[in-house]
Length: 358
Image (cartoon, rainbow, N blue to C red; front, top):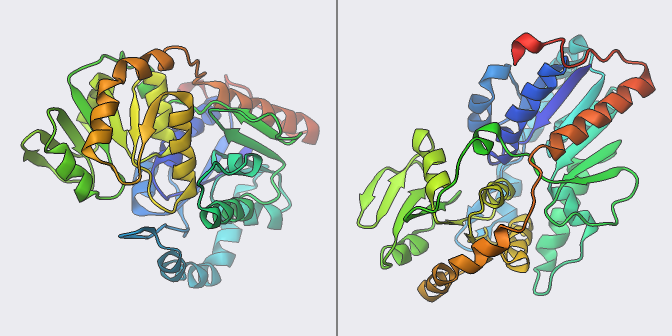
């Protein structure tokens, strides 16, 4: 089948997942056309010759995500699509797509409906439509996240929803699955070393100052900074990251879904520093506490971190009992595609067609 895959370029969680999914789809004999936005996403997916589009980037100020700045700074999307809609539509028509796959990327959703092709949505954000807001939730942020999710994934034939809890009330079109784990993560042999991995998607100077006062060694990945400052070693994403992730005794990080999934798979206790006013991050942070896999705080103190480090054996014990199937998401996707191919009478080549691609 010919599959158009729209990948969100906000953060890299969807991007790293897409790399695994595209490789598997090609091994199964499918042709995949990738749409994404943002330089980091385009560079990471460059092996698949992605088409550049435009999409929403979140913007933050000192108090958290700023809705006003996010709206204003993303107005550039409108003139881009006014100028490029016909070109993009011709490009998609030339590809002759059988279905569209969206990873929280709305242009592919719109294009699928305009071209009358089925859409599969695959993300973790749709879980928000099937849960109640936890106590203390900022209800405006919760409702805004739900609204954005409905818009970005409107009208999908099937929703593949990555979830740690897997709610039971999804309905016929919803499949709750464990998140995919990249092959390079699956190949790691984790050990409990002497350092703590710190991963921050936005600078957090207050947290770093606290870390510098503690009797721990921290490897900090943030904003491409490099160098040592006492017990804090700044590093950039690259060859050392997987080694540092595999060998750390714990993680302190913003609460993106993909890193939490990796931490669970590798059995690493996690202290979350969720980005404020971004409900998805708050929801993930609540899960860490409810599951017993870690803690979180929006205003981290030294005392909170000290309690967390003192309790690492308790978190590790809880993690040892959780079974995460790293292949469930991709196997569910492939099964749905096979069902659609049979239903629509579309040829399905099978895994031998592109064996040389693997």
